[in-house]
Length: 89
Length: 196
Image (cartoon, rainbow over all chains, first blue to last red):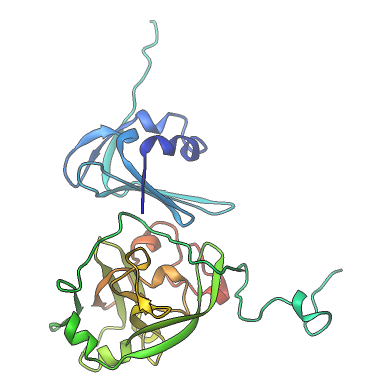
C-alpha cells in the first residue's frame, strides 16, 4: 500500500484544529525523531488515516471518521510544538 | 407512513437477504491497510498461539500438514462493502486449538507489521474462523494479507487480520489497533457495530 506525506492531513484536520497541523512539530516516542508532521507518512483508506514516523514507521496518530463523528488519537507522539506569531507589545 | 414489505414486487428490486444493514455489494476486492504491506516469506513464516502457560508454534510446512478446509463465505467490510460467496482455503481455528490448553476467554491476534485485533475465543471456534492462505484458488496475495490471514467472516472484516502471525490468549477483552482508534470492540455487521 502506498502512502502520502503529512501535507495530506491539512484538509481533513483543518475541520478540528485551529492551527495548521502540518507545520506543527512532534517527537516520535518510538525513535525520538523530531519533525514537522508534513514529513510523516500517511496511510489512508476508507477505514481511516494512519500517520507514521518517516524515520522508524511507528504510528504517530490516527484519524477515523464516520458521518457524524471523528476519532483522533495521538498514539505515538508526545507534545505538539505549534509556532506562535509574536504580538507587538 | 412508508414501510418496506418483503415478498412483494420484483425480485430484482428486493434487497439481498445476505447483505447486512448499511452494506453495498461489490465484485472487486478493495484493499484497506494501516501501513506498509509486509513481505513475509513462507520459509520464515511462523504461527504461534501463546497462553498463560506456554506457546505452540507451527512453521509453514507444519501448517500445511494440518487438516485444510474449503470455505465459501460472505465477507463484510466496515467501510460499507460486502462480497458474497468468496472462496478460501485455510486451517480451522478448531484444529489449531486442539493443541492448546487455556483458561482465558479472549484473544488478541497479532500480525507481521504490528497490527492487532481482538476477538473473544468463542467467536473463533465451532467452525467460525480460519487461518486462510488461499483466496479464489490462488495463494493469498500480500496486499490481501498473504501468506496467511485470519478469516472471521461473521464479524466486520477488520477482525480478519492480514499477515497474521499469532494469537495471544487474554483473561479479559482488550481493544486492538482499530478498536483503540474509534472502531467497535466487537464488530458484528448484522448489529452494525461499526464505531464506539
